[in-house]
Length: 135
Image (spheres, rainbow, N blue to C red):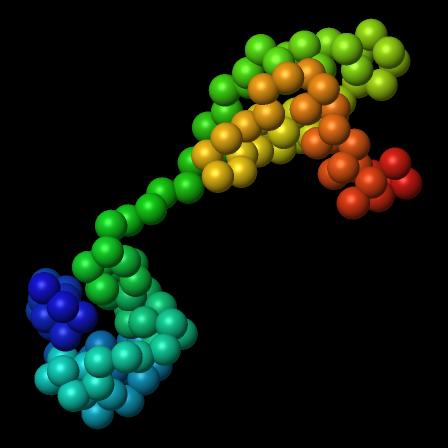
């Protein structure tokens, strides 16, 4: 299904008329008509968000894309990062919890650092770049 069909289907499921959807979304009645009749096929992200919210839906559902869910799950901490964390703690410079989580989530092109030295280099780079020593 395309955008037009999805808007119509969701609108009808909510038992809303085109004017009611337009009012709820803060767009004109004509705009909703044009979307559903496929005369308008490239609405702005702002308009899509307004319509999705009015339909208690998501932009992904309107445009037939899979939903992507963000999770706050604790990332796996590789052994080499754990060694770096212990090394910093022994040296009297323990890492903050948010720094550990940030490092554990780091990857570039699907790869992560795999040695203590790589983690140290990455941490130093981030610290210098974001001036963490003065925070």
